[in-house]
Length: 318
Image (tube, rainbow, N blue to C red; front, side, top):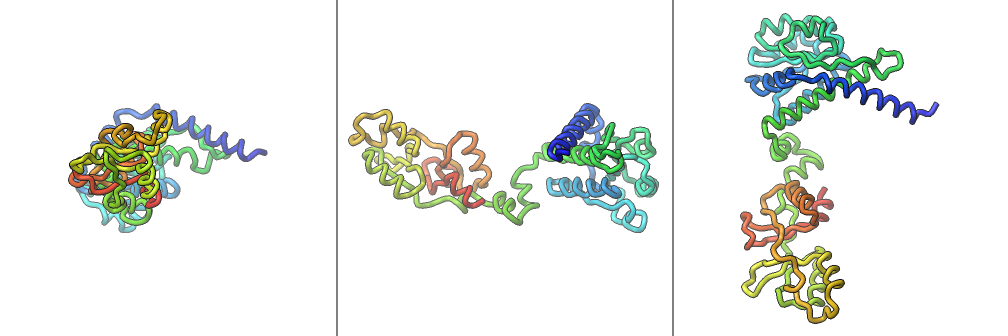
């Protein structure tokens, strides 16, 4: 048997099942998002077994994107962990069958505490679905497991529904990179999200005058190793930029380069970013404008260039 072929079959099977789950999404997701958004306490997610592992991941994703969320193992809940829940909380119970005894056993105590319940289940006729305020339908027709026993497609469907909830809530909260950075201060991701342009930019700005000759411009660009130079007028105001691309175009455009000056082939004006902007903002600005260099200004004042930053500065930092 070709295991690569078999793996592709499993992928395609799960994809087809997920499309069906997608088609079944209705207004209940609106209700779930609104309930979570309006919750005055925390969202408590409960599950057991493999769906519990999925629930743990969903809780972690929500918590890292602005929704106060914790995961409690349903089996542990009925042995004391229900004490972590109060009446201002909202509870999400995840069970594909909707019939797991550990899940059903916590419903009455949760109601006694005074919490609303969101169910994520693949069985809309189950006791769990019938006893919940909102039901997120993750029903599938078949598992990828050849025996139809090991949770495969069903756990993928629950995971994806959790991702949909997370993204919807991020957008509803207008959750931004700065907020994300607050919860991810460690590692490479944290460094990227917390770093400001001023922390990476070069203050050794390549610079020429509008009257600088072509050969001297080439020397400046090569000497500073930034792939660009800023161009200043006689009053020492930055009025343009010359990049490697501008140099290549000038070679094709002018027959006699010896007498060509910066003013004749520079790009008037320039894209800039404030020194206190996030590094991710600089990367996005470069991407949108299909450029590799930015002038860095103080207090977003284009007349006060205090540095330059290139795509290589960002890549090297990452």
